[in-house]
Each structure stands twice: as C-alpha cells, then as structure tokens.
Length: 222
Ligand SMILES: Nc1ncnc2c1ncn2[C@@H]1O[C@H](COP(=O)(O)OP(=O)(O)OP(=O)(O)O)[C@@H](O)[C@H]1O
Ligand SMILES: [Mg+2]
Image 1 (cartoon, rainbow, N blue to C red):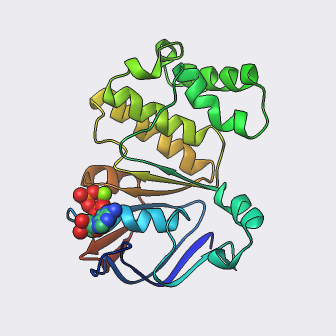
Image 2: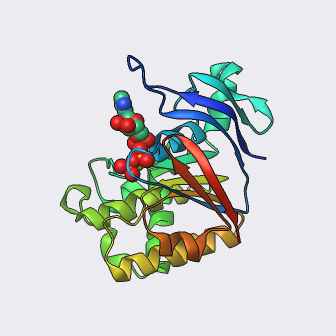
Image 3: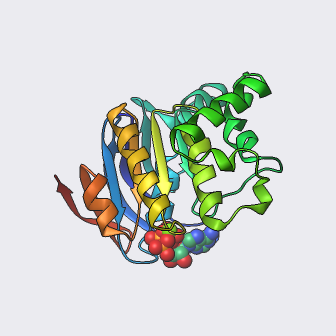
C-alpha cells in the first residue's frame, strides 16, 4: 500500500470542529479511486492528508510502510515527491504553458530546454500543441486546469491526487482529460480523484469512496 490512513481525525488549527472523523483507508498504485460526497464533507481535507500536505490531528499516515510524520525532513521530502496534489484552482507560475508543465522537471535537475521539450511532447500527444507558447496568465480557467494537471503528470509520480479536476473543462477537454487519466492508470500511476461528477467516477474509478460529514459511509469496488 502506497499511502495508508489509519484512524485519521482532523480539525483545522484554531477550530473545534472535527472535519475528518476516524478515516481508515489505503491507496495504492495501479488503482483509480474516486472520492465523492456533498460539499464540506471533507474531500479536499482528506486529499491533502493523502498527499502528505496536512498532518492529521490524530491518527497515523503510513507512506510506503513508514510513519510519514515521524520521518526526518530529508526522508519525508523523498516520499512526498512521489505523490502530487493538483489543486482545484490551479496556481501557475509566470511564463509559458511549456515552462509551467516542465517546472517539476527543472526542480528535479533537468535543463530548462529539456523540460520544455518534454512538456511540448505531452501537449502534442494530446492535440494541445497550440497551448505550449501561451503565457500562463492569459489562459482560460479550463486551460489553466489542464496545464496544472499536466505539470503534475510529467514528473511521473506514483500517485496523482486530483481535486475536482474537470470542474472548468468543456466537453472536448473533459474527453482529453479522461483519456489521459485512463492512460495513466494503464501505466500504473495511482489516481485519487475528488469529484462531484458521478460519470467521471463511474467511468474511471476501480473504487468509489463515499464521504459524508467527515466519515466514510461506503466503499464500492467495481
Ligand atoms: N482552512 C480551513 N479552516 C477551517 N475550516 C476549514 C478550512 N478548510 C476547510 N474547512 C472546513 O472543513 C470542512 C470540510 O471542507 P472540505 O474543503 O474538505 O470539503 P469538501 O468535501 O472538499 O467540499 P467541496 O465539495 O465544497 O469541495 C468544511 O466544513 C470547511 O468549512
Ligand atoms: Mg473540495
């Protein structure tokens, strides 16, 4: 199991309300999971815990069989890099789409040229070459969302965690994204997707996790 939540409870600092109440669930590579549930049920919060960004208030998170929050920072960083969280509202850097998509590769020691080339290749393969040289700040919401998703994918993480990935996408871009996610799944990248789109959940997921008021109320395996 890549990431395992063990009886995780969470409340935001300064708040008295428990947002997650005793969540126990694991996520592995080679599986796509959808997390569905009403607004404020705790999906985003759970995804951030799965992505090793939030430390549970109570309970444990195991990442590749080690207690993640007990690790020294250098070891923690190595594991954290294997999981990528894609924010619902993408945060892009100044510069072109190709630069933005290649950014994770630059951080990992690739040259800027090489990173941009890889970014162009992925855009070409999706029929989105026209985006490569656009300035990030000039993008539509849907284009920005796709750019952020491609930026996460290009570094080939073990698990990609997507928060409402299709909320801004039109039909054609949805199709592109669904095909891309299906391809990632075939390549053995684990997916955890919070979505209100039950069609997306049904088409893509091997497992659907139902969340209500901070608790898992059902798991459907397909
Ligand atoms: N930074 C924060 N500080 C305090 N409370 C927060 C914070 N972020 C979220 N919450 C609260 O935590 C609860 C769960 O929020 P969360 O964003 O995880 O829900 P969600 O299921 O993702 O909802 P949505 O479908 O609207 O995206 C909500 O009641 C929300 O108000
Ligand atoms: Mg949310």
